[in-house]
Image (cartoon, rainbow over all chains, first blue to last red; front, side):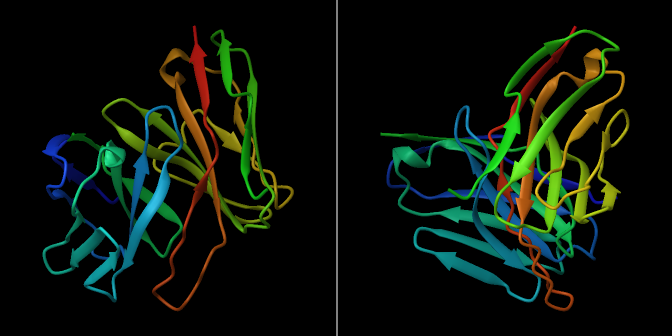
Length: 111
Length: 118
């Protein structure tokens, strides 16, 4: 089956700096890559996603890039704010049915 | 209010005592799924359902059963729970969007059920 690896497991940045989280996947058939944010004690919530026919997608301070050849995708958060502190999960899916998640990145934004 | 609900939210039980965790959504979503979340392992998919009477195994289905008799409900059944099933469980649903090979699936998660098996 698919294997998704996520790095780093923890990340601390100063407020206003950028944060980058990277994921790799193993199955070239994966074609949908969502990112979820999970605040402490809360449920995961989708923040951005990308499909395999697109190389980059941006939504305000958040962007995701996808390199199908290298089988990796990344989350970029610019101008980080304390409310960005959370655990972020990447995932890979084939045709939007079975999902494989990374192990998560705990992001801390230091005011 | 559009939402996914799970019950119970917290459950402590003993090994071997059958239990059911309910999941219900009021958004008329075709797709529903169960995940377990364990420290350091992220979210792992247990079962998913593309529509009524259609269920498929996820990555970690052993020890679990599901059913999808109605579109809105997707209960998770543990016939004989064991301590290694102690975990945080999330149900999710989505309006399955199929557009040729580039289908996507924005999942909405329930609040979670924290299960402890002694």
